[in-house]
Each structure stands twice: as C-alpha cells, then as structure tokens.
Image (cartoon, rainbow, N blue to C red; front, top):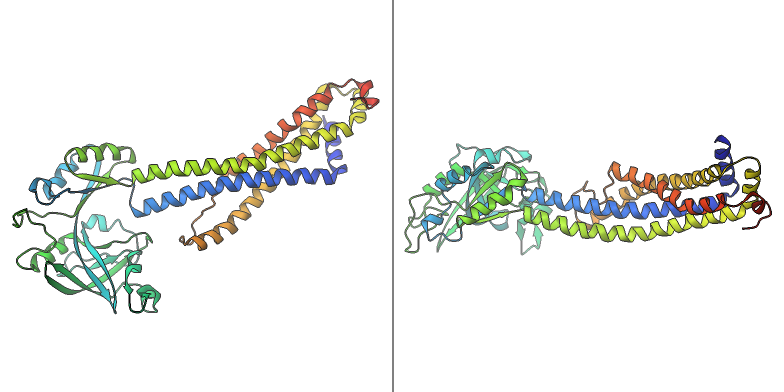
Length: 420
C-alpha cells in the first residue's frame, strides 16, 4: 500500500499547477459554506442574546386589562395566588410612578419602578450599589440604556454625549417631577448605581421605599400612582403596575401564561419573540446555506474534472501498474487517496481563512450596525470547523470515486495502448 501513497504524492507534485487550482476551488467552496453558516449562527446568537438581555425568557409580565374593577387589580393577594401555580419559582410585584427626570437641563419622561429587594439584587451593576431600603426618598438604579434617553432639544444633544454625562449617573441626583392631574410634585433623587445591560431602559428603586414615598406625598388626597374605581374612589389595597412571574424553566412558561390569561389578566413573555426569532433565523440560515452550497458544488465539479483529467493522462501508467501486479483495489485507492489529500488540504485552508475572515467581519459589522463591542455576528463553533474539514474530505473522495472506478476496470493491454 505504501507504493500507492508514494505514487499519489508524486503525481500531485508533478501536476502542481493543476493540484493547487483544485485546492483553491475546494478552499473557496469551504470558505463560502463556512462563512455563510457562521453568519447564520452568529446572527441567531446575537438576536437571542438581545432577547435575553431585554428580559429573561423565564419571566412572564402580568398586566391588568382594567383598573376600574377591584377583582382585576394586581394586588398582594394576587401575588400569593400566582405563587401557588405549579412551576412558578418566584413572583415580584412592580410599582411604577410616571414622571419627568432631568439633570443639568437634559430630561426624559419615564417611569420609576419599585421592585422587591431580591429582584434588585439579581441585577448586574457596572458601577455603584443597590438602593437602600431605609431611605426616606427612593434611591435609584439607572439602566445602562436609560442613560441615553436624557436629551436636550435646544442643544440637540444627549447628556451621555457631554463630558460630564460620559462619566455616568452614579453618585448624582436627578430632578424628578411626578404629575397627578393638574398638580405635580418635584423632588431630587439620588442615583446609587447603574446596570451593565445596554438594552436595559428601566429606572429601578426599592418598592417598599417607593410605597412610603407615594403615601407621604399625596396629591389632592390621592396616593401617587394608585388608580381609582369608576366612581373616582381610591382602593384600600396597593394596586401594582405589573407583576413579574418567574417560571422554574422555559418549558413551563406557556402553560403558566395560559393559566394567568384564563384568570382574566394579560400575560406577556419573550418566549413568543424567541420562537419567532428561531423561525426567522432558521429561514436565514437555510438561504445562506443554499448560497454557500453553490460555491461548494462548483468545487466538487472542479474535483471531478481534475480527477477525470488525471485518469486520462495516466491511462498508460495505470496499465503498466496492472501488468506489474497492481490490482483493481490498488488503482482505486490511489485515486481516492489523491482526492482525499486535495479535499483535506482545501478544507483546512478554507476553515483557517474563514476563521480569519470572521474576525475581520465581526469588527467591521459590529461597529457598522452599532452592536456592543465583542458581539460575534460571525460565530464559528468547533463542531463546524471539524465538520467542514471532514465534509471536504468526504465530498472529494466521493467526487473522485467515479473516475477511479472507471479506470480501475480498464484491461491492462488496452491501458498500455492508450485505448479508453
């Protein structure tokens, strides 16, 4: 068998130009396929990461369809009932106060939302600390995305674009104005920290502190942020803006959402968005694979052409080998080995060049599309690299099998005379 390998390597060296042209075709075909697949994988991962950052796929947001009926209010009693549903891990009430936040002439209209301490401590902070639960006024955590909402219309400039604003909000005070009908309340609130999530547009505080603040600072006898019934009367219970229900796992989300909806409340979660993204990215990946397959098919045709040409050029040599005792299997093995060498070399080069191209493309497209630094829009997992190389070898061997089988069946005397 060793002489078969030596003959194969000798032939590849002898026909160097043709050999490298074939390898180039395989390399291009492999690169096209790999880059297309990495683009699909990277795009899917980037979109799923954004969905996860904007809200856990295990979270269900519960809203009320009306605040004019007491049995449709989001209350502590409802929180207890929801926590008893099988598959529910945690329940967090959320109390929100709408208003205007401003700093140094830059302002935004956004709600301040109070969350239980346990939920606040699950947030990842880029700076500062969590709000105190013993403060007389709410202390705030500003979402990394919410910082960009502060804008000055006269200057046409965002606060984060200024020298002072680029330092962040931690340790500063926001002027907060809460409106209730024709009256308003204005206070200064301290920012104790910022989240590290660029897609987080929330302004957080401790819910117990926010309750005390709302109760102390009533406007026209009404507790801040609390609804009234259809007759204009206040309720004797806390009515929350929303309730966050956390499922034990993703598989429980749809069932729990259905139970909540059946009770007359609105249940929203990012799982539907996740499923839509999965379907959309599957279509994108399919299209990309089809496009990459065109280049791969061209590479396969190139291999078939190379091996067929090699067969015609070496008919006399093959006849001589048969006269010297080489059998049909030796001849087939020689051509298949050459095909495997071409496919393996082209596959490895294609994967290496694809990896380099992915690094360059990631830098270019991440900056161009405004994604966070480090986002991989072209993602090559190890399994893809291995599959691409093995696939290139297998396809090359299969492409070389047809001419190899044909030439192995030629009788020695006909081969020596050059007769096909």
